[in-house]
Amino acid sequence: MPLRFFSFLWPLLLSTLLAPTPVDAHHGWSSYDNKTLLKIPGTIEQSTYKNPHGTLQLKTKEGSLTVILAPPSRMETRGLRENMLSPGTSVEVEGYRKNAASKELRAERITVDKKTVELR
Image 1: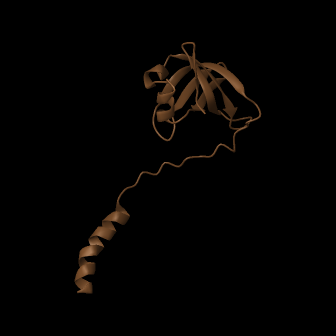
Image 2: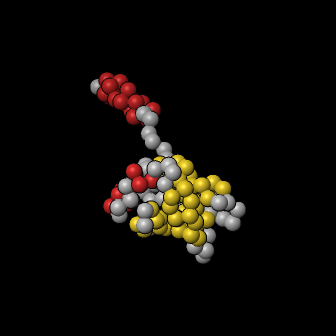
């Protein structure tokens, strides 16, 4: 009897182990300089509105900058809709740079069309 049980169970176990699972590594915020809040105006070149958080590729006078936003559910709840982050839209982002030489910013708030949205 036990052998018959395992012959039935092993395909189920094997398929569970081999099933694809989403792996989206999330990073912590400790690597960002939270002592220097920056206000950076720019134009959206590209945006994503998906978990674990949205992102912007922002064209600034210094070059291109990757902006890490909040999770879509928080942005939606606070009034920042996906269509507000279209390419060509002018925004001002307030946030913390990852480090002095980094091209990445963790956004605390964003202003779009004179509307400021708190992201944290």
